Length: 206
Image (cartoon, rainbow, N blue to C red; front, side, top):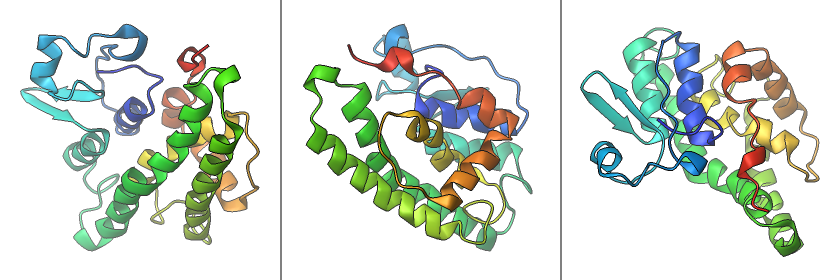
């Protein structure tokens, strides 16, 4: 449940597509509204998206949803069976939530969520600098690797969801060869192309 141009919803739908799971999408949040109804709050008490319902199980929080889907439907592929193999994936998944997403989404909010005439260039520049530092960590991690933990994993999903927005926002960004190659690699995945390369034009506040 959620809007398809929500980055957090895209994590869930991308994971579903990678795993080949058929699902029904219920548009909620954003211009669709509906997240403050008693019915929705009974599923997700925080009134946010996404929310996943799998039979009688309800899961909210995008990273919890992605991990659940990988564990339940991707054992041996998207979900490595060995805890040792999963450890680096979880490191980058948690880092994406605590450090990376707040950095890049701060830039997105300063540009997309603020009318052009009210935008503060100094705030945007500070946000870009913070996001660039985070991207620099990804750049180092990708040195000699195709994906964050070696093979494609849910860590790439929760971080890679940022790339389409990052590379299409009207900002000056440094050239990071490994990040750019990673983005090109992800664009070759049909699940990424279908679920992440989605217009966010209606999110702009004018």
